[in-house]
Image (tube, rainbow, N blue to C red; front, side, top):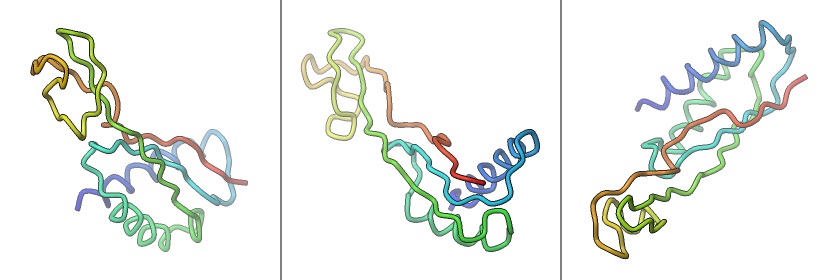
Length: 114
């Protein structure tokens, strides 16, 4: 379960940010998580709940996960298509010369704090 290390990294990143912008209490953190990122959302939530019990700044805070739909583009014909449905094969020309354009990210989108 790499989600615990992801949460550790996210919390460390936020602590670094809070050194420059003092925060007294975090209420929620919103993450954008790509549907093909390899991150399992409920594992991420479980790791968040475990980790935040150990950190007073984050205790009781909510993790909000916003899924980011995955899509790819065919470099041969320009077709934009659903990556989950068709993987690396363009549904229009059947080329494998495709590139993932969105859906692999894990980003901190928003923090609600005081």
